[in-house]
Amino acid sequence: MEPLLGTFHDALTGETITRELTAEEIAQLPKLEIPKSSEE
Amino acid sequence: MAIKTFTTGEVLTSADTNTYLTNSGLVYVTSAVVTSAVSSVTIDNCFTSTYDNYLVIGSNIGGSASVDLYCQMRYAGPTTQSTSYYQGIGGITYLGGLSTPLSGNNASAFTLGNITSGGPRKPFNMNVFQNVGYIGMTIQTWDSNAGSFYSGAGYINTSRTYTGLIFSTSSGTINAGTFRVYGYRQA
Image 1 (tube, each protein chain N blue to C red):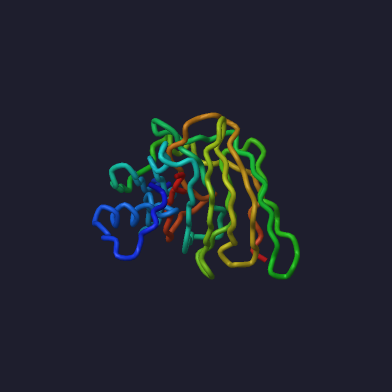
Image 2: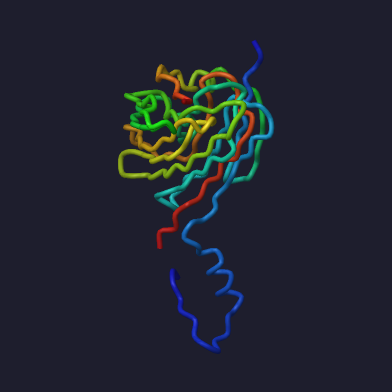
């Protein structure tokens, strides 16, 4: 499984980095069962 | 100073010019641009005590596949709020029928509708307001294929001082897009 990448932008410092998400960050990502929105 | 009326012949000083150029009603805070495929886009420290209300504009948002775009709020740590999301977003298709509602009952994120790898990319405008005891949002958007057009609102029923937000997808990646944050000037 490829690592999940995320970009992190800090409005305070202006710094932007792209890095692998940590296990904790991945665990906090949404796990929803909402029906996918329709395209039609 | 919120308002000043200049009179004929009055000297417009550099101080006044600088003050009033920066005292617009809507004040740019920050932006994040997606330049390569990522699973999430995080913007921290964009919500501060300076403003109670913010406008978040998403434009040209595309994904690796047909997936839902999610938004979660962040707070000091920074940590992602992953519970207590309530929302109701309704839509109408271009054919006049009702779209599948985007509802949330103690969900782990706001769901903002579909993005795809092709077609008109997804835009949204989301007003974020920090009220006592919770944070809420109102949104207007369409699916990336511009097949459904949505409007609705939601809030998080957990009292915190929220400081940022993170966008992610149900699977795949966000491949393109710009997220801009503005603050509504209060006085």
